[in-house]
Length: 215
Image (cartoon, rainbow, N blue to C red; front, side):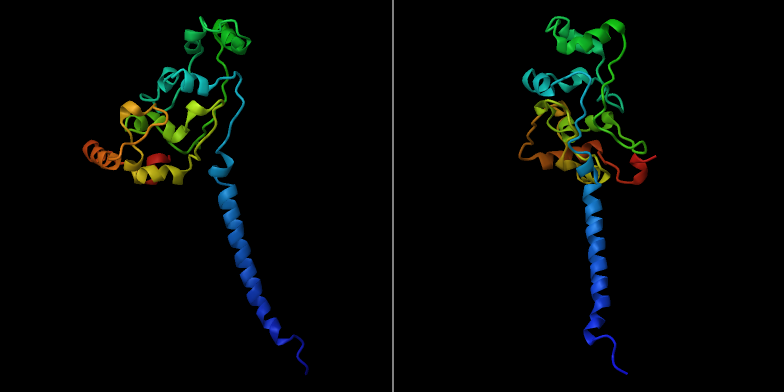
């Protein structure tokens, strides 16, 4: 009986297997990047109900982060400033500007402005601003150079793997507590040795077990 398929047809199953594996690898890489926070979240820049330039207020005027976000060293959650905080200045400066009309209306009515949250963490993730800021983690480390942002956007992925980089090697990221709100902070040459000594003396041991951050 004549052979139906040529001998070279024997290679087809091998080629099919290679194509299947190659396709699976490409699909995994595609999902790994394009569905990751680095791609989906970084750069998120919602339009706020009132225009507010961090570049001007922080970068040019030198306003400290804690002037508005007063809870970052004492509470788990950072706070959005009350309208009264805005009016501390704007009751005297640009008091008749149309741009801050919603601020004046909020102050007069007592109704809060519904600012749109930029940085989101999953409900199952636990994060304390106070723990981090009191142990030398600067605002800039997580939020980026807000002093250069006309409109605040998410600068870092805030993914678990990103957090673990710091938790596993805190000496690479810590700064003096007095510098946590400093934008553009430059580490001194001996900062690794200094931070290693601080970690030892203060017992700074960022946890890496699941239950530390997840309920």
